[in-house]
Image (cartoon, rainbow, N blue to C red):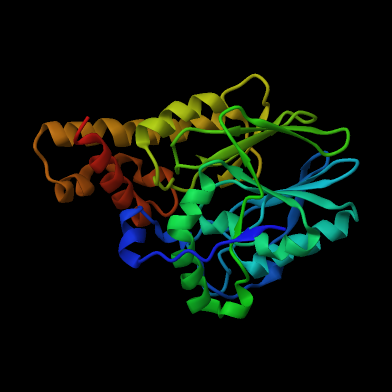
Length: 314
């Protein structure tokens, strides 16, 4: 049985934790807006919307899906709300009646994990980074209250925490003739990013360690994220599933994200050396990247703020 969180956290605590607008889900859902694609043998994905959460999209903004083995199904990420998770479960049952054995909780942000409660009656293993329980303890109550305020508590369900955590040593799953290896990353996009590799198709699932075309959201460590990007460039993987953007990309898609993060780092450092205030830095840092990313104006200022706080004392 999965554990559910009842921890309370104040809004001040949440803001200090660096929450971003993409993490605050809203209600409402139109299933006709989405479709599932089989992007590789036995891998089915739904592209999330390139948008902020709204009442009409039920926080269905992340790429989610499932992998089918001979004995079990793995949910790659469960979606941003109970309706999103229910939609995903319906799509799974269109394809297979195999048991849903595993649900991956890739990191703390609600657009990736708030659909997990839709799978509680399947009694899967809920798998997350070893630091995810602490992150949910700090942030979970605020996230859940926000969702309840938007769509009503009855449509939120319990906040699911991992029943199995993956430590620095990694982990392995067997879906039945299909091996999955999991990796717990150092602090990067968040403090609790988990990725995994499907060896059958050599498809890597980095979740929000990889944003494609949608501007990334920094909520962990800029230096750490640049370091962890290198772990995604492995000969074991010929395709990647980003957390946001096209559902399946080649490893070359890492380069634009690295360029943005390096620009954010280098221009923030320059602003600090030149004695520019945070407000001044927000107006200029990474401005040349504006045309390369959707939602740039919604998120770049926050990214500059996080980078400035991290780099001003290095």
